[in-house]
Length: 461
Image (cartoon, rainbow, N blue to C red):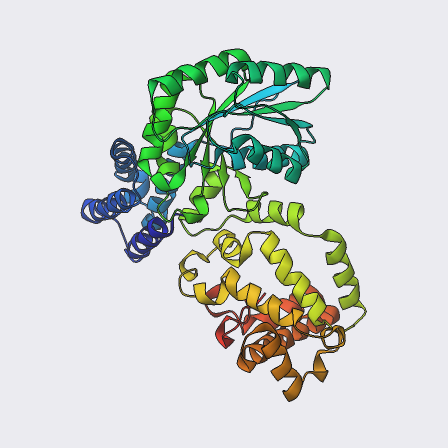
């Protein structure tokens, strides 16, 4: 997300940092670059105008013109104004009510509403320890009810059955009564989507809203529709008292116009964003962290949270003990590392959150994409248990058999072997001299601050 915008702003920042002092002329040049970057990112025109005016007013002040590092001050202003546009901080769900707290989900067909409901249920169960109930009031779309039932089973949530011949408002009322009797904390109500906004749709969703009396009414919208997402959200907001927005498919949105437009146009906060197809690929939307990613500063806080939530800490501790005892780092260990990377959204997602890595993403995309990680896992899975435990026994004939087993070339096996050797050396240094020694060992393999191993044609971790 924001790839194009990040690249344009990075170039503007670089030019400004090369200036000894800022003048009105080069500030205007920078503002023109920022304006074009925002428009290309499909940010709504009224939002762009307001943003540029606010940045210009502050940039022309004495704080910038007299600064010893004027370029950096200008970028700081852009950062602060972007955070202001998207909202100062993450706005959490309001669940402070007599249970069950009802969350109503609205949106157009194809936005990913039903899948997002299941993702939100999983998040509430794992992070908030809430018991959830899912119910579908979509009596029009074929198999919509069955889809939500399947997803509820997948995330371990309860499901309230409904049928296509029932009234949607009655379904919502009965589900909430059931949740009250069963002492369920949160009810998530799926409503019917349409291909476009129409009067019948709005009338029905108003009836469902009146029956459900939700504490949260969330609008789910596809971020790839750009500023149209903000306009659609505004139309729904005029019909329903929205409390927030969930942006879906942000992993496929290189522009980011929706994220930068919605708050300003609707006055409603973006509360979550969908970052992938997996059932746990839903993140709270933190404006300050998102802006930090846009400006190539990374997002260490989100990275730390992901590690805490998604890394298998038991396996990590076992590996740490193994390293401390000086035992060899084998292919079973390497496969565990690859799989944990995938659990955290893949290497591209991790690099996006690492400070100073924004500009590298395109250059190393072929080396760090998830397809490459899957190829590496396939190679390891083609090995015998003995070969995984004792990598040194893998010679010519074994390499040929492994390559044939996973449908790849011997060169691919050699590259993985080299990758493993680098990782094993790092682990040895770590066991002898701790983290500082390991970082010294990594230094030679980190061109431009990149992950280890990039310079040798493989993926490095």
